[in-house]
Length: 165
Image (cartoon, one colour):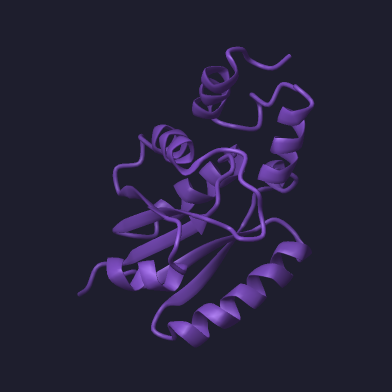
C-alpha cells in the first residue's frame, strides 16, 4: 500500500487560526501532509516568503506528519508531482470559496489528473477569517491575536518593533 500524501497549498499571508484548524484536521487523513507556501500572482504579499515560512513552521510544529515547503515560481501541480502527492487539500469557508476552488480544481485536474482533490469545510468559528481581513486589521493597527497564532504576532512585533493596539 502506498503512502497517502497530501498537499495543502496557500499564500498564508498570514496564516490564521482557520488555516491551522483545517491543517490539523487534514493531517489526520494522511501519512504525510505538506503545507505549501506559494506565491499568488493575484495578491500583493504583506510578508515575505521567509517570514511566512517561519510563522507557519512555528504554528504547525506540534504536527509530526506535517512538512513545510515553499515555491515562488512553480505551479502547485508541479511541486505535488515532485513530492509524490496523491491528494490536494483545500478549505471552503463560503460559496465564494467554492466558486474559486472549483475553477482551480478544474485546472489542477487538467494538469494532473492523477492527483485527487478533497475539500474541508471551515468550522463556523472560522468561516469569516481570511488573510485579507487580517492584513486590513494590521494596516489599521488593530489587535489580531485572537485570529492568528502567536508566531504571527511575534513576527509583527519583530518587523514593526511593537504589537498593535
